[in-house]
Length: 338
Ligand code: NAD
Ligand code: MG
Image (cartoon, rainbow, N blue to C red; front, side):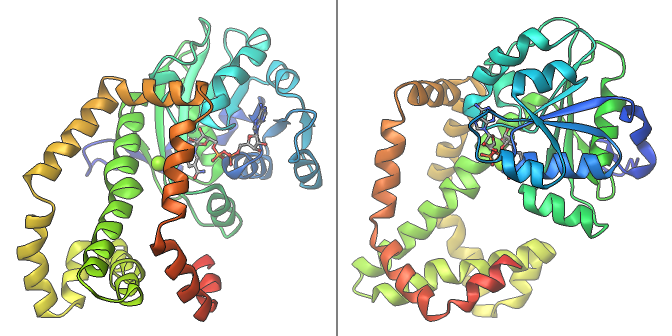
């Protein structure tokens, strides 16, 4: 463990896979995270059983990967650690189905805190509740493991009924290959609230609205859709790559002095106090549960607003011009997938 950060970050020396080698792990779901957790755990010598519905199209994939498969209730009843990796919106229903087979001393293990933090799942007494949340999509978690590389992850313990929860979570993280890179201590509350805020205000919502607003401003100003697309969307990747590699200074150092002066002076006028106040409101809605309630109700209603907003985005002309331009340099698809 290193103590140069504000929160503990664990590495291989802090974790012992042997802590869970005498246990059975049920991995519920075989999607992005599920397939990677199941295979990495199995390759680390852990007894794994995958839990999937009888009708699941993922059954043949899990079996082809050499894993035992049963229904979620049977898998969870057999297991000591139940890793809940079905989509967040259906986890409460899956929990109802597996609850009879969960015993005191078992562990419920998550990769995102939403359902625990907002009380959509209330695990029975005596059960440990932990989170190991890799900070990448599952296919990278799997690829990094097979390449002897690590994937950073978050660790949180919501409830430690056995006294072993923290050590077991670290063992689980090590078996995924995450302690090779670093496992950051957090809480279910912090992970859930920062994740929701980040994807709404900055990553998914914020960046798309910034791009679309810039695109529309140029097109409304009489410039071509093609120019607006390149300037506001296509070039975004180059800028993000520079910041990913070396922070904002790597980006500022790579662009021209003119871009740097214009960016440093005009940027704060675009993302102004009003935008920051909007961000504070979005954060408050996450913190007081307003967003969670809206999303749960939206799902119960069959996702009408979700469908309508998605269709509007799909029909925006930035999608149309973008698809036609990307077809001209389709090799970028392959490069982007590397
Ligand atoms: P996913 O949508 O990729 O996979 C879901 C899997 O669950 C599929 O195999 C599906 O067949 C199965 N499934 C669906 N309904 C089921 C049911 N009723 N019973 C049993 N299985 C069912 O999900 P994901 O993206 O891997 O997300 C799983 C968890 O991991 C979530 O909590 C998510 O927040 C978290 N997470 C995801 C990522 C990511 O990049 N995808 C990263 C970190 C954490
Ligand atoms: Mg996220």
